[in-house]
Image (cartoon, rainbow, N blue to C red; front, side, top):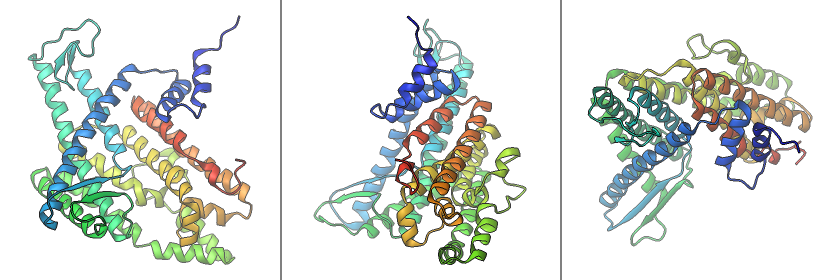
Length: 392
């Protein structure tokens, strides 16, 4: 009786939608690479626990600020965001570096002996292990700051756009609290915390963050212009379509952007880098400003994966709303640049897969299986079947 090779079995299982997406991502990564990294899974678990701790602390402090500012007895606060994934991946990469620095049998993440090596052992007081533990503590402290900075920026955007559905809030004595007032209170608290932390951090950390925010805000200022181009193109203006191609889809990528070779030919790279990718380039530069060595391949993998995720998840999910609201995105652009919905659908899928393929290549170059698994997770979380022209 013949048996299927393990990778073929993994590929079939990865396509079973009844399985949790995280499991399908791990199976898909193994099917693509032949690599099943048990250490990566344990690192992911440690990252998840640490991020939960960071967010619990952040939200607890925000709840205290709400109680004080609103003069109420009690409040609960949570904020739904996808922005923390790149920080999680970076922390996972730094955890892996810390493990490589430690002696066999010592786990610098938990500061225990025998947790990772099958034979146990490892002296926590050994110099190499003390340095590895200090490295972990620095990484966690930097990640806590960066997560708060990302939340601060995301909340600012939500407040500017009057989008409060991601804020989960209860306030004692008020069954229907004003979401704007609560959001502004939360964001103001985070801004104070981040500014205070930046004052204590090396100048390079603030410089990296400020530069990224400036580029992102400059892109947002072009929003009305891009909306006008989309409206004109939908009215059949051929010149507007040409301008979408030139100014949005194939806008020139600056020489100092963190891309080289094949990725510079990606459609929408410049506009989507300015829209979402630059924030994570700033995040990585902030880690570097603290003193961590992070290879360019790792950073490029994250930036390309996040741009792909923006298209594959948000822009695909929001397509009909974006058309109704006149919002130019890579997805609405493709449906106006070609007449046939089937062709537009195929273009959206093809463009996104190009981002993910290059992100995978850079993840492999950086030896970051967590990035590879994250890309699989993003890919399997998308639902392109909701787009016009899909066979679903």
